[in-house]
Image (cartoon, rainbow, N blue to C red):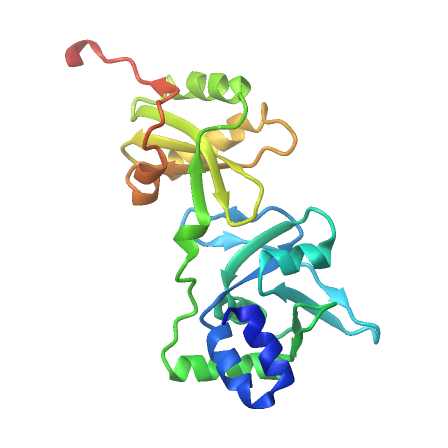
Amino acid sequence: MNLDELLREAIAHPEKRSLFLQTLIKSDVYVICKNPVKPNPDGSVQMELITTTNPDGDVFIPFFTSFRSLQVFAKRYVNCYKLNCLRLFDLIQSASAVLNPNSYGKEFSPQEIQSILMIAHNLNIPAISMKEEETIQYRKLSRQVPYLTKAASKYLSKQPNVDAAYILEMVRGCERPQILFVFDMIGSTRKLFYPLSKYLAEVVHPGDSLCFLSMEQEAAKKAVQGIDPFYVRKKRFFER
């Protein structure tokens, strides 16, 4: 049974609630975010979840067993993110949450969320998404962005520690695609990424979301497979 089916069974048959909860905390769920989710340099993400109210005026955070359930609730395009349910509970443990609102669903109070977290901790169940890497896709750009590659090439030509640079699209779960820059470089990424992002901020178009990776990361090596660099540093005289 998938998570949707287990939820229906748990609602109809209370004795099956334990199995549903055991499956839920090991599963990925979907949340709606106010803005596109932005990755941090350390691999974590920044997200601001939306809240809504029930007919009694109580505020809660909606989350969903599937992207389809989210679409039925939202009825329009929204920024969303897929993450492990236990990780979500760890983030929102002082708030109320409702799984699949406006449908067959389940409400979780702050006390219930904290109880689930305590049980998971005692059972050594990690609050991480086992499928997170599978939700990230890398692909060639679906549109031309000469305003970015030209500006980036100009900036990189003055950076002797960058040998090559790639540009492509990265898609996390059901989010809008982000423009990913990957750099074959040595030295501090912070000293490159931060000033470069400020430099490119002058030319980005509305809706552009940029992120940066170094080839030192395995994810970056995977991302650029089959992609040609848009920038290659000219060899110095002693390198020829």
